[in-house]
Length: 492
Image 1 (spheres, rainbow, N blue to C red):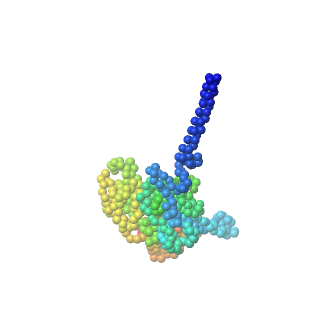
Image 2: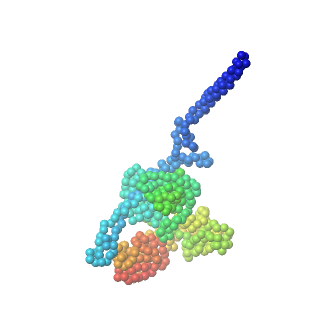
Image 3: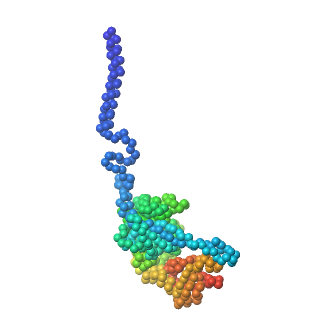
């Protein structure tokens, strides 16, 4: 009997002991887990700190160094200074005869109403009294320009001046006390630095996107104007149609670029966008506001990349700098002793290693400005101080109107019927002529200028731009209404 009781007692302990131990363990675990983390059973997204009192911030990123990169300050400081630019132009339509001479013989040339073309872009307010910087391609050929502010107020705008060489333009609205985005220093930007693009893509007002600076001084050969200056800031901030003319700002909310182009095979954002740096845009804006057009300074050199072959020929040990292929006689560089074959390393202490970097530094100046140019010749460095000149070799302010006035003629664009009859795709016609350079060379009223130094001319504006950038002998090609082709050489 005692043995039987002993066996039953042992069985009871084997069953009860684990049960009691399990109950005690569960109570302890529950108490400890509840004490340590009362919210431990909640589902929390990875990487986001969740508490009752602190909301999740989606506008900030934590960098590898632990610094917080917050976009809200820059966005709030800049979004009110970016405007929506809406344009309307009229595009002529061909007649129903489509140039059919038999149809026109019996019925005369048919007419169709011009078709309105609507455009949309962005602009940046740069003065409280209504000056706005945008892209030239946003307002080019526009007959009506409407500017809509971020507060939804709307104004008619006028064009103050344009600069196709940098694809920039200044427009003006009649308003005061406007929010202004201050200019920053684009040269201080570093590759990898955060920037924001602010604009109106696809007519979506006041859109902000973020990215980093992917490259600087980028030349993408997109500007077709003669002597175009390209030294773009490349970013991966999303920029789409409608962003053109909008702001690129740093995290201080300062303007560092004007968004201008995208690299895309579809027409929409595909990874990279490009902005004109404020090192160029600031000077262009000031010149247009003060003079109505840009006053360009030139060093008087033809330049190119420093290639391995050229470095070997010149006996230099590295590929830094910009190679001088030729020097304009009597120009700023020639005057101080800079020669063909020299290599420019710096301008005013700023390194230049590509032609567009050199162009960017020179474009910041006006004629008569002095610049310090560090040059290397056969591995020996020398610092020169050159006085920049205008495109015509002088120091004075040059006006395109003055250049055209010197021709002594008035012009108008050639109508489609006359161009078709003469078989020419473009041209501007002399409508009146008086004493001037054209009359001196025998040009008569009615003459149609088609080319200047082999560059096509389709408008008075194009003629002005071409003549502004030329000096010395200029070859003018064209045709008279009777079909007689003529060539004239004039001196500027």
